[in-house]
Amino acid sequence: MTTQAPPSEFSGRNAAEYVLGTGSDESIRLGLQHRLWSAATHALWERAGVQPGMTVLDLGCGPGHAAMDLAQIVGPTGRVIAIDESAAFLKQLHDQAVARKYHHVERVLGDVQDLAQVLPGEQGQVDIAYARWVFCFLSRPEDVVRGLAGLVRPGGRVAVQDYFNYERSLTLAPRREAFSKVISAVAASWRARGGDTDIMSRLPGMFLKAGFEVTHLEVVQRIARPGTTLWHWPNSFWQTFLPRLVESGFITAEDMTAFNTVWQEASNDPASFVQLPTLYELVVTRRA
Image 1 (tube, rainbow, N blue to C red):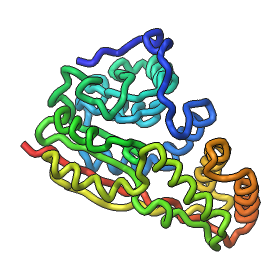
Image 2: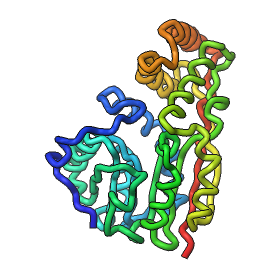
Image 3: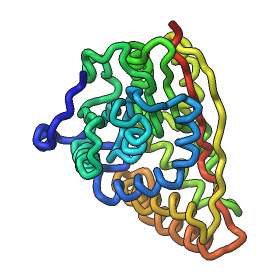
Image 4: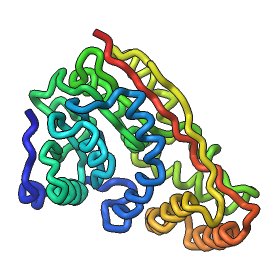
């Protein structure tokens, strides 16, 4: 069984640099993101069959927003194994779990691309594995799939929410060149680190090759309009990530200024809207 490590065990470790950072601003953004997408997420968990008493693996758990919800569903007779490379995020999850007396949440510091090494002794013990916006950032997604093939029991499932066609599906209406240029730079920055904004196009084949059966594949498409709650989701992303694009040379300071001007205009225009990047849902079942 995976043991729950106290915070001190993580304090001396340097977190791997998540592309969007692991600071307090990103933690707050992730909290808003989880809340705004929670309806689709919970519906996917129901489709995957998450139930009390199960062992659920949360891949790339971040500060633990999904892990805490999963812990409530599986209850004290179940387990949530939450894995992430960020010690800071895992410390936040620890604090939340302690405050809510969720003793069945187990934190694991490690790379999801090395599951066999990170989770020894858990082979065939996982009922459901879940990953949301994780595979698109990985340079070795095939290794994650192979690792899951060993961890998920026969008949168990993997539920994934991730991207395909990101650059074309994320669109401001009416279209603006300054907006489109930055979106292309966002995708380029992920690819430069080994990620893939079209990852969902490859995942079904990877899972089939690893001994899984595809049982669900669908999309969730949402539109955000100025003045709505959902408008704050992309807005929070720009605030966090655009300065990073400038620092890393993917856009110029002038590009960011032009983008911010266009975004402010759109925010004040009741006729404007953003087609958010299409969220693809995948559920696969481990064959016996």
